[in-house]
Image (cartoon, rainbow, N blue to C red; front, side):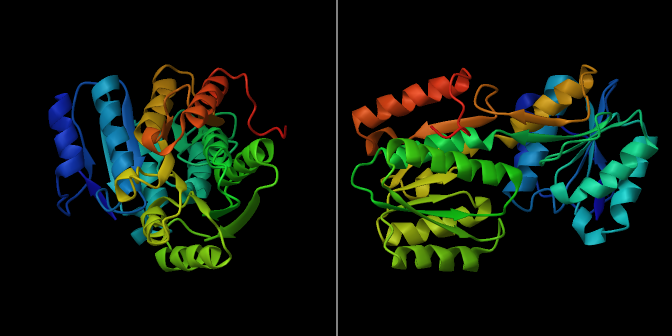
Length: 334
């Protein structure tokens, strides 16, 4: 586990360069030093620059520094020191006056709940799904179902597709809601369409994700959906070999298959983290589950215009507007 001290460049461009392009020296705790009443700390499960998830957490922390004029600090590689290191990091930041402490992993939940009891005046958040304690511990999540419905509708509105495959990750609440909304869209727009689902059980088990995709192909699918995050590129590559139309939830994969990806659902994790910090800074943190979606620009739906016919584009655009405005409840069967 590394806790680091670093004086960030405070201009917008400078901060972006530091957060996105630097290599992090193995030193002690990292933080910005500035005159600020609002102090925010982040705990990362792995190295700050090790993967997309941790990099997006760091980008969110950098936006908190720039846009909320906050002093920031972080400790990464928490998982290397579990179980002892996480309580120590939480105690240290709380005692040093950090008013908002973000755990960038749902696995930190139990220790953060205990810390919230020890430090009732400190606000704690995990980037995950949790009901919170209705006081000072809560969770930052997203309305995944909105993208599930739009991506399901995208495939359903392709008349030549008869058998859809869905490679899905872990049965967390957001993923289960995505899958339910995806199925609701298929039932509404293509009730006779066949759907086969395979669970990887992980966001980062590439060999299993590939094997399950190949299994679906062997079962005769002619369209594919996925919500497996870091597994997605490997799944896309398998689908490209079979020229399967597909929709993707997770990091932007359009460059991998520009002619086959019909639509993408993006989750802007930095924006999600910034929303949580704004609530804390304004004294509005209530220790519950906070969910953000299309209307807050935490989620983004991107149809690939050249891969969709005009009729599908129009219908999907109408659905998008209905969801953003709250006129369409995507988790209700229609």
